[in-house]
Length: 518
Image (cartoon, rainbow, N blue to C red; front, top):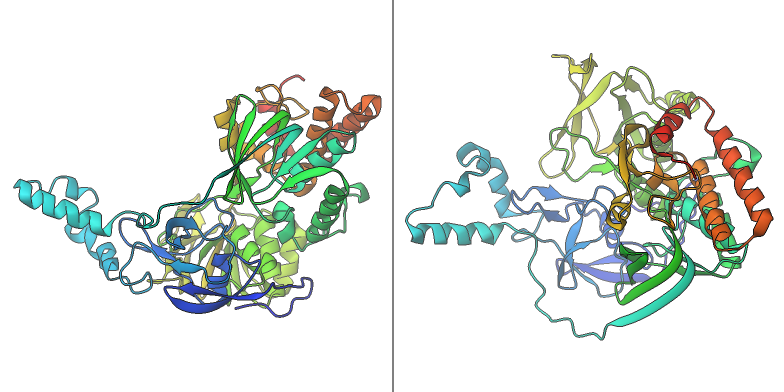
């Protein structure tokens, strides 16, 4: 399943190591996650669901969905899409016996509704007490999520307190741009990201950007990520990799660095640029291993060089779905079809025309009805829609071994809620977003947003939002003077012009609902 050649990407694998999956040795490379290493070795079932023992694989590959939880070195419920391999690591499936692939408790899923409808155990087997105690114990034996660690944590905890001008949470295009533009004018900046690299979604984007020269038109996303990374390295920016922020408390940030060190960050300003996570879609068997989010497939294929399967069905014809279809074909993966519930294609015509020329059919006014398979995806059934209702008899089987859901993103807003920002649900911006002014400052003084967490848009607007937020932070702290003010205002105007195109109408409608006077 590993890619050995690619027309654009070069995969530089780290040192070969051995990890153990259910005590069986498998080959992996330093720098890749446990999930990608397992996929590269043909292992797609990671665990079983906590109650009905349905098979589970990974979905998002960015640590948001908890579908890939496994036991790692004796610790249960570890999301293996965010854990990097090391020599001798012990990986085990959980919630199964003897293992997730051949789990004998999986029979529960097929009989539970027939004999014991969901929730019936609350009413059955209650008397006598001895029977209730016996049945409750048995139910607890095959329900739950993993077993507690047998060893007691005995390492010495580490702690660091950091004082900085601007703390930036998220090292994607918005976060890096905020860091660069504030540090250029002398602000002391701390940039945190949960990955061991910077770039966010840019590291998966092999296509060339549209727009004008100043928007890096004609440059691939992976190249833009590299350019931004170099700028960050050239400036005196404190970058904290593999750092997870868990809360913002009256302007003080709590985080954990590399799962070992507790960080207390005391900043004067904060920029939240945590991006977005993928939506899923309701259809029969949508939890089977082999049903992925678009970003999960891009991560597996473009970051770690592992094929998600041999033949895929793409659900959603927005730009992400269309571009992903082309990327799959570049990697030698066949695309069976693209289905779109709307009566028209959602993304740019140029992307749709490209994959049509390569023989991929696009079914508009169609949706996926069910995934076919017991333990993993073995096919899919799609159906035609009229007035958003399924047309009986129009079902069609699609041959595929994976299904990719590319139906949109939602802002990763949880930190903003926890920090006390006023939030609004704005469909045009993708979901819950904070009320803020045109510089990105929220209703919590000194706390800014930039990028997809402020509303789902393209990377180009994310970078401009990041520059504006970073500059405004620096200006408010007394850095940059008139030059910084002039630059900030120029970028605000650029962003306004950028959104005046045909695809900006929806965004502008959404911004009217959340923007307040600066």
